[in-house]
Amino acid sequence: MIPWLDGPPGFPPVEHALREPNGLLAAGGGLSPEWLLAAYRKGIFPWFNPGEPILWWSPDPRLVLAPEQIRISRSLRKLLRRRHFEVRFDTRFSAVIDACAAPRTPGPGTWITPEIRAAYCAMHELGHAHSVETWRDGRLVGGLYGMALGRVFFGESMFSIESNASKVALAHLARFLHMRGYVMIDCQMTTTHLMSMGACEIPRRQFSDILARHASACPGGARWPADAGQYIDWG
Image (tube, rainbow, N blue to C red):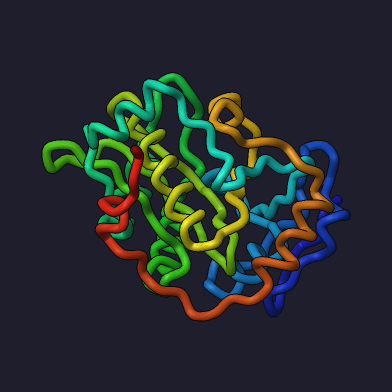
């Protein structure tokens, strides 16, 4: 059994999360900024299907990527040097989340419900949620979005409708975060794609220790510079 959350934002210790399904911690609560900030400071995120109550997760182990350790293949580096894509930050957050929510074939339906979309768009307006967007010929062709607290970025989802577009967005995100002194990108769930780019699994206890040092303080958020990608040197 998992606890039902009610009242002011608050969560049980992450060590109480179930082993199966891995990381399920609690249900209920809300998706207001207060709930989301309280959750992310503890390494907890919402993930649920349409029609379900809000479910909160803290899996063990956790997949993370140190920004300075991103692995960029030779072919991707050539693409970055050629600036085949234009990369923008925080100019079309709602379009990125809509693209991430679009049906994918093959694959299950989206977990990005209208409630999730509204919640993260609200966090974007507050300066806590951000998008990295890949454009070509004036068309949005890839990108990602997530939350930034302290010196930690919590990745949520990415999409690509042209080859390598999401990899270009992730490469720019990692370089941008490294330049700003961020220590970790939380990738949440393990995928071979992210591991091929340098992500690795760490125990939840280690993940929580990093958050306690680098994500506990949460000053007011701010939009990222839209043109920051232009100043990243891939030479």
